[in-house]
Image (tube, rainbow over all chains, first blue to last red; front, side, top):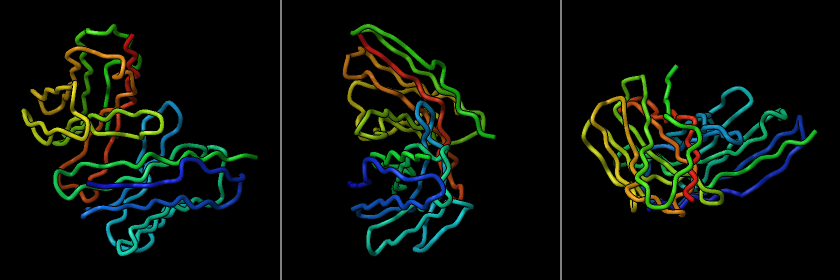
Length: 110
Length: 114
């Protein structure tokens, strides 16, 4: 099985940088995803890491270290619209299914 | 853009009723999934399908069944709804063999069982 841990809630200020961590215990996985979910809406894809290292996409970056069982999502130049839940998920090695963590609720204040 | 459509945004049913949740995707995706999302528990996989007429149990299949008669449609069935099945249900699809296998989600169905 897979065990994925994320902080439940984080707060940050507009314009700041925030790092959302995701730690996991698994026997194997194909890749790690980050999704964003605004309240009452469906999750939307943010990033995907297969290999160790940093993937940058505009204001958002995601990092993966397989040896440490660790990933993080870095959000720069925070905006109010970044207030949302951020979901970490592992792509299973078997049937291409995603296993999600419980998500981190980020609140951005002025 | 990929579109995953769930038939109802809100649904209220009574205990014991048979409930059908429908999901249709328009991008010819092979894989389709049903998740439920509950506060503090995140998204949990109920069932998934990687081809027509194929189905696989997810992590919490008890009390649910599914049907995939056509590639674009994946239905979730609650044979006899119970109050503990009150939840947000999310359908998703993905393409087999895609470079990153990312999921595209529908808008969700908030089901209340009274």
